[in-house]
Amino acid sequence: MNATAALVRHARDTRLYLFLGLANWFIFLDHIPNDVVSWITPRHLGLSGAADMFVFIIGYNAALTYGPIMLQRGAIVGATRVIKRAWQLYAAFIVLFAIYAVSVGDVATRYAAPDIIYEFNFAGLLEDPVRTVSHGLLLQSRALNLDLLQLSVLLMAFFPVALWLLLRAPALALTGSIALYVAARQFEWNLATFPDGTWDFNPFCWQLLFVLGAWCALGGVSRFRALFRAPVWAYVGAAFLVFSYVISMAARFPALGDQLPAWLHDVFIPTDRVNLAPYRILHFAVVALFATRLIPKKWHGLNWPVFKPLIVCGEQALPVFCAGVFLSLAGHFVLVMGSGSLLEQTLVSLSGFAIMTLVASYVAWSKRQDGHSLAPISHGASLRAG
Image (cartoon, rainbow, N blue to C red; front, side):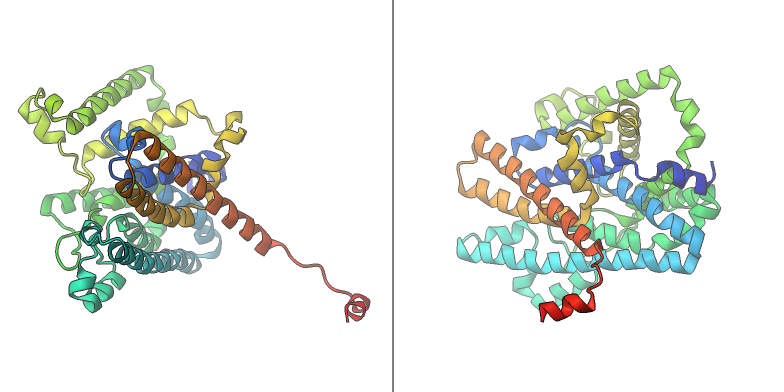
């Protein structure tokens, strides 16, 4: 299947927005420490997490969005549209970084809780505010919970080159991405953060998942569709998911982890998220294959009202992600200052889902209003109005 045919085939796949909305909700839960509701998120059920889902889908969507532009209007026009999106992500990151820093500082001062500044990696604002802000502008921030958006900015900024190559030589583009991934893991390449440390999501490694998403959107996975339909792969995949669940439980409960052979424990625990361990990619791929089998593209259930909140949160992923960052901060603070009971954790989580849905619904409504053209005002009507 060529790129043009693949783009037509995958256009407006509601499942993408469903899963992207689900990823946003899961990321919100994962950002709240000690929230029992977060036990439903992928990172507690296997070897990959919501971040893997998020990066893959935005790569997939980027190819669907900008691939047709590059094909129809040329590489330069397509590249400028991608860079425009990267700039929007960067602007969102800067605004989020500024407001987030002020919010954390205000909470620490107002409630005499200075530890929260160190917990959210904003201590640099007290020790060297000018350099901390300047390095934040250069995407070298260590601010907690902003790292995934920081990664998205960089991946989108370099996507024009990858997309150009994917449209012309998809196998070569994917091979180059894999080579960069292997080299980064082998030679420990990563980007520095200020004042010390490196990125929590190594962009040299995580670019593979982003490019893989774009490659699938452009028809790459169709070449292996017949192979994956063989019944044996379903059994192998199910067995691997069970194994992944056991490993994730062993990581959370040391007593269970001690029962594993030492070599097995050392390979999988702790999970290598920073450099995107190969087993994370494999686990995500298996989950994605099962998900797309269980939920076909034309499944009528996608129109059920129960899925509408998730779909709208996926359609407005950027504002929802930004809202989720603040809501996770607020939720964390509420649980720390409150009782932290099971009921309180549940209410915080459900309230976050509701607010994120309201934000997404408002943004969608606002965009529809901007898209409406005004009817021309006649001369007589203008005189009567006067």
